[in-house]
Image (tube, rainbow, N blue to C red):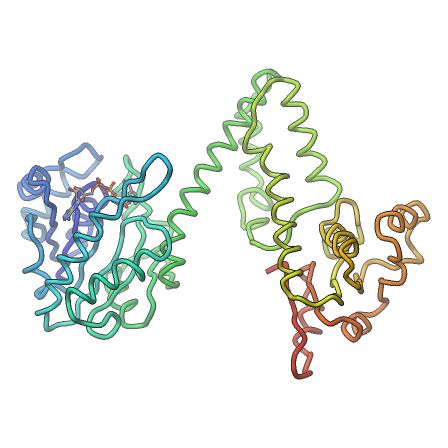
Length: 423
Ligand code: NAD
């Protein structure tokens, strides 16, 4: 393919060199003449393992060149990869001026293009930038329609400085965000032959993914450092602890607990987090990440309540009451807390949990429940169908296939509202 790489800074130059190595014909475009001269003469403008050799070989093979202006080249190229910087202010606002300038330059080039050209954003931006900023500039300047006359896609970059070439050649995956098929195919053509899994998602999801990945990496480092700080006054080996945290690939380094949904609860997570933060405070160790977890969970519960109120119906059936399916354990259960809060606000409640039978609960538990939620015995239904019949709205508080099956089998019209707080 004939590829234009707009912006040959860190990401652009590595991308350009690796694509040229893969057999594509690549032209790097940058207004910084020192970078253009460096690349055109086969040298890397900054240190990066392996990059000098890669540039020397691909430039010598005639598959990589560089220049300062790209508009006139658009008509002869299949694809534009936009790799300009998106620096942020201290407050976090992103400067998008370079992106706007490049979109204008590509748009001008698209006006006279006869072949289908796909514009692919590789820079990191917040969701909405491609559709709301780049697309209108490209369409206005080209007098063409995105998705019809030219392609528009997002292809975030996951390389790390210091191992950029290795990361480019063996990425965790290739992500292509697009609003329609033709744009996605245009971007995907670049990666024919790659071994990495290719995931096609929406434009905005692709934009967000890079930021979420970076946030997760920051969270991991911050978490490990907080454990390190906690271990220090205790005289404990934080590396031994974290090694074993990582060795648990069932619950720790795995997809477990990483699905957005319901707040957590139960007899362990809240209690142990409280204990950890309490002891850290005594030791004068600041753990802002660990301290933020329970408030974050409480904030999520408030959000769940807001979603129930927004249904605007006063008779609500809650499916699932214990903190986790299959346990019947009501200790620090978010579903029970939601029930208590809704009851206090005057909602009429019906409750169902396959693992809770009022008559089998110990006397002490019954007394405590009556105290927190007066009338709970009358609210509890012994069968899910009773709850469904007696509720105007259904609110799912546990992820259970049997709940889903019953809700999907509802055939009434109009269908009563179902709010799944676990999804
Ligand atoms: P950079 O600042 O090193 O390079 C940007 C280049 O764009 C510069 O050489 C600049 O001269 C050029 N440029 C600016 N305006 C231009 C224009 N109108 N026409 C042509 N060239 C222009 O940036 P970078 O580190 O390569 O990052 C690029 C994007 O990729 C950013 O959004 C960044 O967040 C993202 N990203 C960076 C990394 C990384 O490790 N550096 C990794 C993944 C993603």
